Image 1 (cartoon, rainbow, N blue to C red):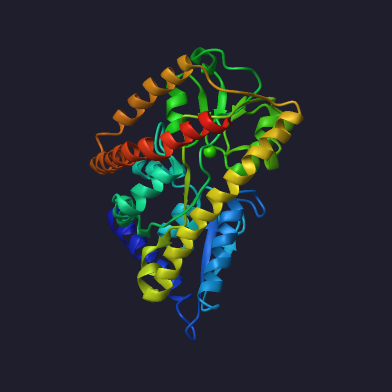
Image 2 (image 1 turned 45 degrees about the horizontal axis):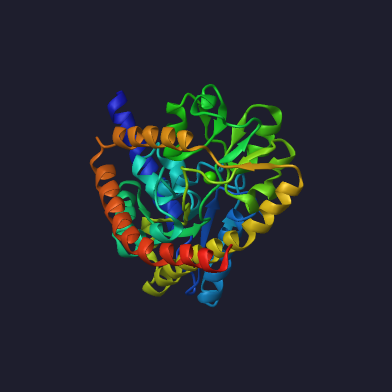
Length: 361
Ligand code: CA
């Protein structure tokens, strides 16, 4: 057998195996269970909370006819292998952050967060009323996925450091964890950037494998325990101003679901976004105060550092413009952002300024 026909046979063998593994979980007596692989250890604050809420809601909304069986990292596949597992049919759906998969396609950054991107509300506006969901599905046709946004942790912290960042030059040589296009931006500033799964971050920071990291925000970061090993915390970051999660489904599995079960999954995913955003925003303030009480110094990056983030971000975004679908997603996102911002600044933005002026705060 020559190499060419061997490859062809292997590919066919792979397809047959995938089809068999997909056939197994089909409806049995009207019921169906979907295996959901996640990137979060069980009980991990904010992230596993969102995945568990999705699991709970789908079972309750379908009266037990459609259930989700959640698998944490290591139970079926590794934390960052969930995308490929669902794309290939090894698992039915995943709960993860799509910007972990910019290696598969850079457009996936937009379905978590991009540097200088949208707030949680702006991302949601784009996704449901600005063409975002359709573009998630267009990307999904390449990877055999139906996209569903399922979570938003709001504006994420700038991250944990051992020393203060006095200027952008302090990123030079820093071993730092930041996924997605934000990580590429820090790379332009000279940082040695890695993407390490959440469950492994505490160990990496305490061992010195990392000099610093970004994870989520005060509530999730406090539970992860980073304050035990680093004492400088920047509270605003450029990289994830409204960070979404996704619960995307293998497209063959999705197409095989009843319209009712598709509607349940889509609406449960929308509920997860609302639930998780409220969870983080209502807990972050108190968590930050506890971190400060444990000796954590909280800071904001200087304007010069923000300017350096801005310059490097523009370069990173432009470098991906050779990809037609990335360019299409970027255009759609930025148009939606401009439309959202023009009203939000005149309404919510102006109102909050006035409330602070009149009542203080
Ligand atoms: Ca993050």
